[in-house]
Length: 80
Image 1 (tube, rainbow, N blue to C red):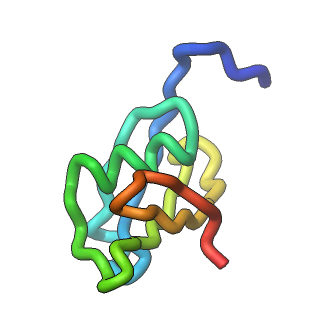
Image 2: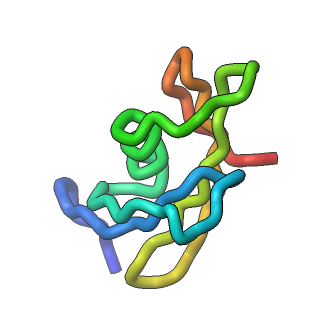
């Protein structure tokens, strides 16, 4: 299926160090956008490195990705 610009999907997102029952459901265009929106909207606790890792699961498919978000720059990268 081709993703059309402007399409959004539902993602369940939670901080990696928090149980998944604390997840938030967000509608965004991509896994990365959902990860950043979660951090911007819900201000989870950060590490002393000003980073947080979040688990993003697409509700419709169950596919998951982990992202490390730099809270100073907003850059998202896959977890190592």
